Length: 167
Image (tube, rainbow, N blue to C red; front, side, top):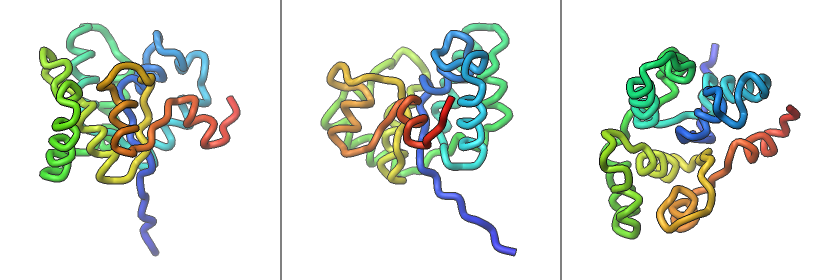
């Protein structure tokens, strides 16, 4: 019997989770059931991972809202997809990015958790494609950082096309 080693291909940002798992999202389960199932299968299967900092952001959103949250319940049940810190490698990459784009590292300082630098570092270290709904705007968002540091990124629609899914 051989154990199949799963090598992650993607890491996913909070905004992509929100678009699938929350009712206000663009690709809600109510309207795009097969997308939700396909993405969930890739997450549970280890092809898509995320960072523990994203889980903390999901948890913070749940605590702030004080209401039932399907995304939080799903994330809590599948917490193993949110990978722990890879120190000191991630810290080194975050410093490298922060030296060039200090605003990226320090944005949302008023919030206790900020996953973007950790996600980019995770993608850089593991040669992952970063799934994010952020668009190419501004001087310090995920797309700008990914372009400058040669990290591949796509949105959910790109994931659909890349995997040949028909909705």
